[in-house]
Length: 438
Image (cartoon, rainbow, N blue to C red):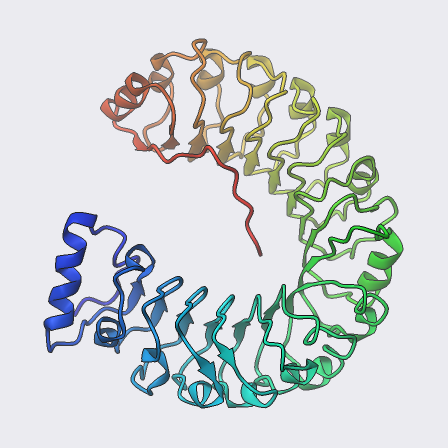
């Protein structure tokens, strides 16, 4: 029996995909595949095809608009992870939730606009559910009470972009008492929540993803300090907003991951970096302004991952590399088009660096010399959208073939030569930046 096939449809060419699905549809046999990803074939997946995968443990059917009731018929007896995000035809009411597989531990129903549930509906969710994603739930008839009937074992809850009738000042009042294991909340702040959210979040919260984007007034560091004071166990914090004042923010001493990408925090980025906790392992400061290379001397000594894509000032200089922590294993300086780095700077990369990402950044000062002195432990090198003539095909004579290369939008002769040298080469288009959620 085939135990697991990740991304089942991903490797099927479009020319044979329809025939492949028709064969499944017309067959009376179940498909003995445990991990199913329908997203590549989203326009072809119907209920009578999906039901042939009743033995699946993981199903991602996001954006499969032809699906209707197949997952609400008590058919899937072993399913523990189900994603039906953006499915437009699925009607989700109280009866449908009662018929979800009782084995589910992770359920994602983000941006499903067929919700017709009552405030009592979520008490019918599978009792073993630990992760629930409800991003974009905007059913007008619901109230904050819909969040008071969640499974007791829930530890991850996503309520980003939910309607204001749901996320009121009373939305989180019972969560700390009802959900003792809740440690991850993803939500959007709004005017009503700001005064009461600080006292409502669970004391043992470990991951917080918060969108505080507002036009006026600007949210100051006092809001964040009041919030973080009540969260001593917080390990990961993602803040999304614009023109936020983080000048005197007091981050928890146990914080391991901080993501302030796209916040455009301006001058307060200087104070933020100078007061980062020593235990911090991951820092994402992408697309922020007014940084200087001098700031990197304040990076925590235990930092392992530094992501600074699209930084608009000339902060990517040779001097920056002198300040990088020696334990750093991942560095991403993609889309930094105003960088002034040269071979001498890159020769000072941390010796333990395993992943270097420099897609579409200014490499005018880089020659083959850089690739003769890369860290010996480097496993991944991404330099997509880089066609500098100062770097020739000879670089591949200096690299270990164990390195995984990404060379999208490079010269064809460079890509072909790399493959001839035995490299594992990806040519993915990395022309558009990606923003990842926790």
